[in-house]
Image 1 (tube, rainbow, N blue to C red):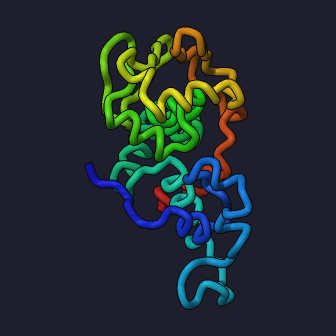
Image 2: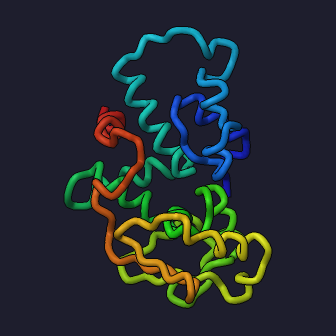
Length: 208
């Protein structure tokens, strides 16, 4: 499966905001945004004229990179969001939030979305008792996510579970650290999604 394999701190600098792609490093003094806040490249410090199209593009790119989704896949999310009843922007963010890798991150079973994606790909989680290794798998209300019993004693997984208590869980999810499980209670409301994007500008970008 295709994915971005370049330096992720470069993505944060390009968008001018922390995307929290490196976990604990993003909260330390090693964060690229804190050390070099300008965009990467030879002309990163040059002034740029922000057009309406440019602002819309940046919001779309920011959302893509925040969730670790490539261009074609993100466009499919938009098309699905537009087909669903309700507000398209809210639908889009709900689809992105209910990806399995994002839910693993929100439950505190990983310190970043890229790490959650890797753990899912390596088959460390089950959904409703079935092993799932597809990061983009869409969870639904009532689904129960479990850390596989075989994985619970492994080095990194064990470390993450031991420190998970310090990571907050949103109200639309429920976590049971003793049972090593998490449950999707309902779909998230817009005010429960802290993604730093203006989703209406993304909708306008695709509606051109």
